[in-house]
Length: 240
Ligand code: SAH
Image (cartoon, rainbow, N blue to C red):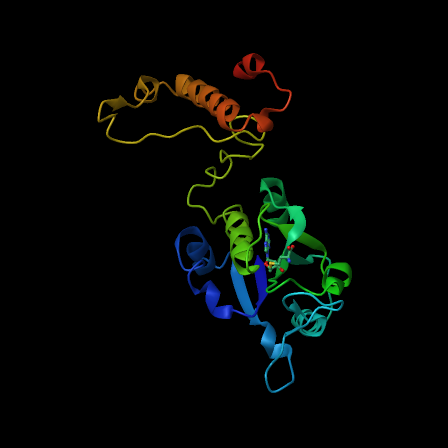
């Protein structure tokens, strides 16, 4: 899968993609992340990407022209498997279902806003979708782009060492129950400062372990994220 990132801070991404799963995915050739400097599509001496907002007020706005020119030069002819996403505090909330859908798209271009945001014509006439990573305002789209790429990368076939490990992750429909949290995990030592790992996980009975994990995933979801259970009944869920 190919990701393009359009940003005024290309160096920002030296850290986020140089570790763990995302680094391995790139090394294995499963993930190709191409970073583009928005200023490469400006033609004045100062490489100006921003201007004052019409109507007055605080701050600056990213101009439409460099953004349109960048996308048109990266993709001179748009193909169906190519998606342009604008990172925006006003976008649709990013979630695991969107990550799953994106993992099936061939090529995604992420536009990172800065300042007060991006001229609205980018959202209206260039982007296929406007995406927010949460109900808070960041100072730029770069962190959000890194979040989206990390979440999608781990879903690409072959990127995680163990093919099944993403299936049981929180929010996945394939997991311990549709869209629930992952079950809690323990590792050695079995007794840490008097707090014991559950015996059932140590006895090697795989059917009991499976049931325990499912039950503890349901319990943890009910405790911390009851919104994910919706109208589902805890008691019936146990016997699924
Ligand atoms: N004035 C805007 C915020 C601009 S923040 C507003 O109130 O909606 C500058 C840039 O940071 C945005 O253009 C966007 O690209 C990015 N950004 C800020 N918050 C974000 C979020 N929650 N999710 C994704 N991108 C975000």
